[in-house]
Length: 305
Ligand code: 0X9
Ligand code: ZN
Ligand code: ZN
Image (cartoon, rainbow, N blue to C red; front, side):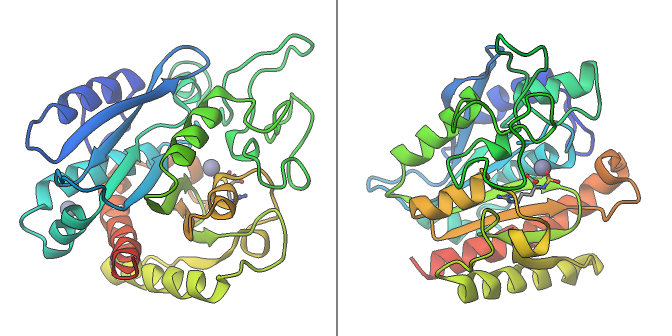
């Protein structure tokens, strides 16, 4: 059965998506934004109080990289907490009254399924193209942001293969199309990875600072402080290129350059002891502390609409 404190298989997450979206409390709905390479439906959950007017929104995705299992666990946790604390927690209530939150629980579904069935350390998608026997593209190198200029490989066998062209991956194209279609309402983009305990923002494709660098840093530092307040977990924040490594084609840089002013990449627990193999006993504390950071960013965005 599905559990918020376990790493659920894609099959379990898929039935969880169906059942939670029909929980019929008027706070949640779902829409399919396209299919993956292997034909699995990519479903975005929309959280927010129904409104006659169009509301500003936040878009969050998890599971861009297949082996980063704590990431989809966080998106599931976020949806549960949003629904169960609405009407109790004043901040969540206000957020969902004023804004919508779009959640894509697993971006790279084919890869995620493959890590459960065949290779736990798989990172990329599972697409194939004639001319190479190697499989998959790094979805976080396939966005159209300085595409394949740094920190990415044009070798299809590499774990950071940038793909044959920007948005060559159907999963990337589906998400990019959704964000472009909703560009006028999407005020923040949050993407969840692991591991390293970092809160990154643009740019990663260049060492140049973003036009709104100081505001992005201020919000990241506030979010990191909120996260730390629960269990003392320390996060480092900064622009991707200088904080982790230069790497082009990422979703955060692409969303920012599209005009989404608040664009953040979380790298969740830990700092390497377990790495991608974070024990299930850490799902709950990791998700609870990360909620505080995401809610901090959301509150800031809401206040500055
Ligand atoms: O390399 C990545 O894609 C991310 N780190 S991970 O270990 N989860 O693979 C960092 C992404 C930072 N942002 C960009 N490179 N645009
Ligand atoms: Zn990642
Ligand atoms: Zn909780």
